[in-house]
Image 1: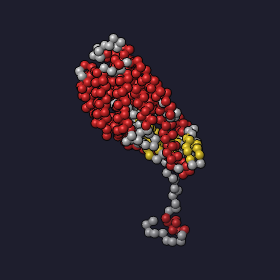
Image 2 (image 1 turned 90 degrees about the vertical axis):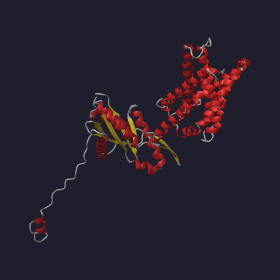
Image 3 (image 1 turned 90 degrees about the horizontal axis):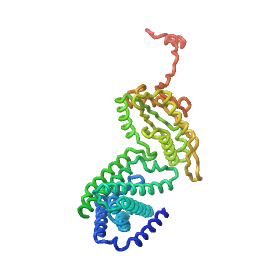
Image 4 (image 1 turned 60 degrees about the vertical axis):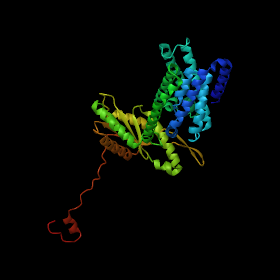
Length: 431
């Protein structure tokens, strides 16, 4: 982080020394003022939504104010573009970061990454538009696209990279997520390119037309984040039971239409109550989170993994079109998961010092679609029956398919007449 910040200071010094007075033209200063003011107005208009996004959005947080900083990178010399970044982010610090109790050092680093991204975008654009081609030409469009990619690459890699360095247990891909945040960043930068094109062709005041769709984008992104929070189990990061059942039902409907197969696995941690009793519920939460991460790592990206409640997890394995799952195949997948949990080591902090929980095991029951059932409810019933069969088999086991608990055989007793005779009583009439 310090390297990035020192690099920004060095670049700003070089910009000031090499730029000269020519970069402070009246038109450039007018563009700077308009972009800075619109950035402030944008923050004020979307203030409540932005504060809510800060509270519910996991890192990295995509700041939609890049509309104005990217437009500055395309229109202004790097030093003036950095001034736009400073104006917009100082206002964000006062109005958004501090009220939501975001650490100041993160704001400093984020601001520096944006300044570096602005420099990268400006350099890429200047390199392609060496002859100062207008933005409405083919060369100008190519310059905008390359500058957009440069801005995204520098900003995303620096932010995600520092998160990975500070949390070695998280990979670059895990922090980046499913790519939705990168798509949002590209969409925001595209709006910045439209603002820059409007300013260059019309006048700086026309950039105000970007504000209404930008506010709508803020609200749409917040709704998406709230939907994700509502469907996610807070302790494990997996789908909660309701969200898992909803998505699994839709997957099975598609599988039925495509004549494909699927499988459901229900997993239950063996003797999980002992972890809570011995080490406390916080330790139990750490174990649940570690098991959830192990399950997620052991299945494919399109498999649905959810927490069913307590120490139970559930997995839906969609099949490929025209391919049928058979029982040995599902048993092999479930056994691989069982062995992964069996060797899991979870480090937890206790009042007596660090402790490693290494005696975990899981029982797994499975069912296949459509062989064991034609809908989700039936598949869950069969998988649950198989799970209890695995429990009865001694736990840390896998069972797939319908396993009915055998009923206890009670031998018939002597006829009532004989019992009465033995007791010395007369048999009742009609017996």
